[in-house]
Image (cartoon, rainbow, N blue to C red; front, side, top):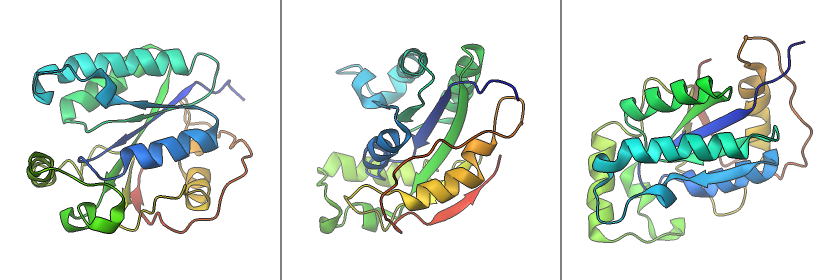
Length: 196
């Protein structure tokens, strides 16, 4: 079997949909790193004005994080141009990519028991992002409904799903291997759909 290329899992969706919460949990369970795209945002500039720089910084961070063979989990809202850039640049660097679109209705994202509070600007921007399709990107490899997301780490649902999709996919479409992990119990991630 051909050697497995390093892997970057990209979680994307609107503000507040659970990219950081799930990204940290997934990175921990996979023995990899979580990279939050917000850390590369340029202060004082709107997101759209610095998205190419952020995408470039995400690629550099992912390549650096995966150099040992451990996977990297990235979290950031993506436009189509960001997706094309990330997919192409990661492939050029020898890193496989898998894009997971996280989604939930606005009223669920801003619900008080969800664990995060939002200011008026964030609420307005979330509504705009959902309207603009950030939670339903057709080019994603998979879509996960996070409306039942809890603050605890989620694991068994990820493992079953990863077994069936993510680790079966390699750069050459050959079968891969799922490393063994001690997954925690969780039924909080209903998988909406996936495609390779």
